[in-house]
Image 1 (cartoon, rainbow, N blue to C red):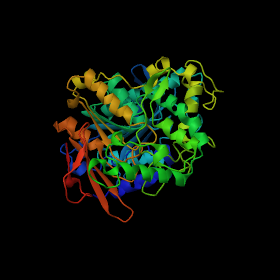
Image 2 (cartoon, rainbow, N blue to C red):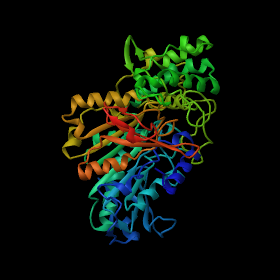
Image 3 (tube, one colour):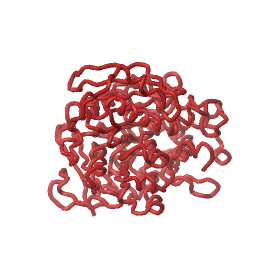
Image 4 (cartoon, rainbow, N blue to C red):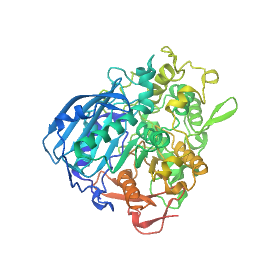
Amino acid sequence: MTLPSSLRMSALCLAALGGAAQAQNIGSFRDSAQSASRYAEASLAATGDCARLGQQVSSVEGTRLTVLSATATPAAQGVPDFCRIVAMLDPEVLVEVALPMRWNGRLYMRGNGGYAGERIDAPSRVALRDEALKRGFVAAQTNTGHDAIAQPLGSFAQNDLAKLVDYSFRAVHLTAQASKDLAAAFYGRKPAKSYFDGCSTGGRQGLMSAQRYPADFDGIAAGAPVLNFTGTMYDYVSYAPLIAKAGFTGAQLSQIGRAIVAKCDAVDGLKDGVIADPRRCVIDPRADFPGLSEAQVAALEAVHRDMQHQGKAVFPAWPWGSEAPDASGISGWAEWFVSMPRAPAATSGAQALPGGETRQSAYAQTFLRYFADQPASRPDADWRSFDLDQGFRATGFISTLVDARNPDLSAFAARGGKMITYHGWADPALNPMMSVGYHEEAARATPKLDDTYRVFMVPGMQHCNGGDAPNVLDAVTAVIDWTETGRAPAALLVTQRRADGSERSRPVCAYPKVAQYLGGDADKAASFACR
């Protein structure tokens, strides 16, 4: 399957913006032409006046909405004409709502990455907005209440509980409500269906919406969610000093990654360069990677064992395989575990990293300083000297704000809500075992969970995309069709375009089923079945 030129351009924009900006799978809307719900048909005409929308919608749930600009934007480069609203919800939540002149009757909202604060006109965000507009959606987004250039990473939360609450869940909720109210004023009716699409922090936002505000969205695509935010940050802290001492080189990590794949690849019965389920991968770093220093062995062992606190496992071990190189030969650990930039610095300024920090250590550092002990801030906290035994908080005030761990999805299910999570088994940013664990907990807490929530674990995929494996998928179309036609997805089609122009595709099955090879061309999805 060849990606449309617009999505190929989206991929280029994402690559140019660096690691955090890639917290989105570029396959959204890829399968729209084959959608059973035919959601891309825009037949409803706008009846309102773009310039007057700010007068018609001035508050949302008692919160003031100040329209900063209302611009009638002409059609250009395949994007239809639309009304662009830029507004602010008190205190500082910036919102963009794009309302096409011909509407498909639906709302599409996209999530954020990292500590959010992205500029709404960043190229990657504009590209996603335009893809939604081309298919007739009202397209919405928010910066969650702060600007990442003015207040990098988590510094916005210093002595500012309001911004922390906005980041945690309030901004997404109010943006969804504002978008529905603006649509009602512009078209004479609210959206018939509303959808959310996000990965990483966006995945957490999706889960949080289903848990806290089950009426906000009818369908949610929640990729690689950082659902246990607090546990993730403390886990980073637990092994970061050992990683820093290890002194891994890029060449070493790529070699280690290739050795892991070579040992575990064929466990599933097919030698294809992809580890189907890394939980079946048994590695002894001392024996399997001769020549490593003691410090390097210790670092690998720390990452791949459960995080302990006072003799109890409090966060799961990372599966083996995130070390594997992507199609360009760069280890998945580059930038995330070790300080090796994968791409040019983000031109949007969002999520810029302090010099010498990895993405994991920088995220953990800002968490320790501005999040961990809310409402207090500790601007001098440092992961290098942090006492994890004394400082670890499994639960508490910050956990109630930022963690999306409530397994009871009954209220979301009662409304007919549908949600899909996809997570790469080789994710070097967010431990994929979080998604597996949450699904298992939700299955115990939510009757008939499979009718509401399905998880798809993607072999070889890194954070939201990437990796030397099929990694482009369209969870958005799948969740829309599930919501509107009742067609529950048994599998998602995942594809990879190789550098030589060839393509391979796989079905990724609804957990706990896995794709088993039946025979034939191993590059074709038809050669596999979910079992």
